[in-house]
Image 1 (cartoon, rainbow, N blue to C red):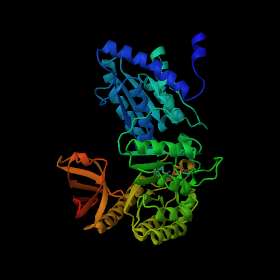
Image 2: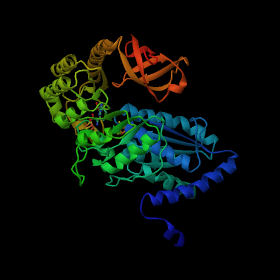
Image 3: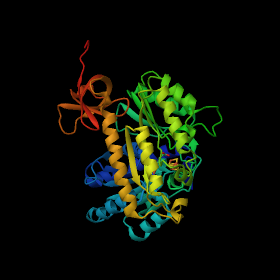
Image 4: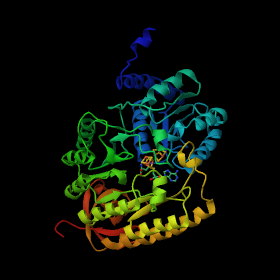
Length: 476
Ligand code: SAH
Ligand code: SF4
Ligand code: F3S
């Protein structure tokens, strides 16, 4: 009773209490092992998950784990994705391979979290057939990792904590950034759009925006730590601010972020065409720090299919938007997502998608075969497209998309553009790898100390989807 009374009720205080407590258990584990306990988080899926994994790692390091490879780890966490069936299958495969490893190392712990865990079917399957898993939690309680680990250390049973939804946003917990010079920043969570093929609204809950002052103070802190590029994250950033007490739009938030000294590049994902405002286009055109790139998922080129997808825009509406963007920001790079084989898609519908691709000429496009997700409206549509037909269309689309992307990528050959240097080239240590404002990769000779800096690079040779270049020296 007396110890219970000591546990703080409010967050983040409660988690700091459990972080302290978990530290004792991890120290004891370390003493038993004769070394520092090691942890590995493997992330599947999108940047939302990557960001959550940074928060998880922040807590793990705070309680005394050191990061390691999966083979060496005493605690393995899979942060899962379920947007398409193949993401799901991969997790079961990886999990199956861990079972014998855990048998050999009885102190080892396995945790599963992320979008897949928000599906009842998945958790039931794990409970039945994967009893060796120690910890299962979802997308809404990532911040509770220390508390859940304490529960596991104290009980020895499988701990399962899944919430259906939340209206809470817990701020000010530790986080471990993957890169010192760039960082993702959540501006909103969840999604209210219910595109009929998509499982995200069911596994990430209702849309909620973070308070602007929380976002701005996080970015100011990041800037003071040396971060120069930020990526604002949300399933539909264009609806940022809905439901907040203050009057704020995504465009206004961008302006305030652009005013923060030290931040040199601003990116954001994802922009839903139905909510892209003129105000946003103007801010993008005006603010130099906002990158010359917009990811604008079209999903399909036929208005009939778009309607069945519940995307709320038509082909014509989308093309008008693209025209407007290109008028106001002439050199902008446009990228997109496209789904092939949505239920009821006919050859004519598909040809409209191809026509949109040819008209817009995307700098790159992610193409996906439609994947049936449980409990989504599209899963019960009766006119599912046979796999062989969908696959054949997918190949045609991919060919077109790649040809256009090759041509588009070449347009910068010979120009000198700013590159944010990200790492030593993975194949040749004499080379560095960085990104242009429009997100294209550039490799050029240079030394490691340039990592994290923005430098002018002459783009000498286009190699399909990336460039080889040379850094300009001062005065050149
Ligand atoms: N919120 C973002 C996308 C999140 S999911 C947006 O609205 O654009 C990323 C991409 O996965 C989507 O753009 C879509 O192209 C694809 N996707 C989502 N559900 C899918 C499904 N059931 N089958 C195939 N692709 C899917
Ligand atoms: Fe899924 Fe649509 Fe929400 Fe994007 S906007 S996450 S595609 S429901
Ligand atoms: Fe996957 Fe969840 Fe992202 S389902 S794509 S990790 S929001």
